[in-house]
Amino acid sequence: MTEWAGVVIGVDGADAGRVLKIQLECKNVNSSFDNAELGWLTALTVDLSQIQLTSVPAELGRLTALTVVDLSGNQLTGVPAELGRLTALQTLILSTNLLTSVPAELGGLTALQTLNLYGNRLESVPAELGNLAALRELVLGGNHLTGVPPELGRLAALTRLDLRFNPIVGALPSEIESLQRLNGGVYIGGCYIEGVMTTPSTREHGHATVDNHPVTKMNQFTMATRSCAPNS
Image (cartoon, rainbow, N blue to C red; front, top):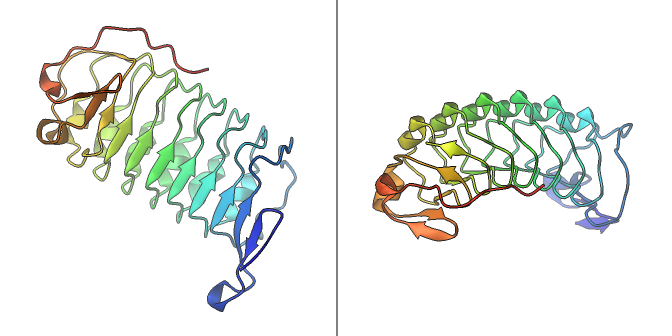
């Protein structure tokens, strides 16, 4: 494997000559990559975290071999709908940006296992995220969400749902009770959540967390104890 300036290229076997990784984090690059011609790359991982990006080129959606995209710690206010074409993508990290919305096309990421949207300015998430059949971890904490779509109850593979530090008021959708594999926990600290939540995992495993404290009887709790101003 050959590596220089954040670019990793394979040298053996089927990977010979292939760009395996682009890693530019913490390089203090102030660029939007608006005119970058990225579509020709055959890549597996792209790490463009913490480089002050203000936009992402739609051409990134042409890297169909991508399995990991990390765009965290930038200044993104949106991401292109073309990212929904990355059908091999397993991990998408968009945390700590300035996102006010995410495209519904992300619901087409059929191989996605981890979606991290922590620390943005989202007021809602698209119902199409409920189509992510392989999704195991969904991180929505630190946003401006007042609720979540009931379609998230279709995420049968989900093992972790992070809703901390959102201004969620009232009960979570009853459809979330159908999630059988939430053995990684439901994290809801810092929200005004009231009502019943009795998913099989919380009943049997007790892996729900409220304000960093475990809750073992979710069918009996009422949350109305603290404000939940999200991270801006």
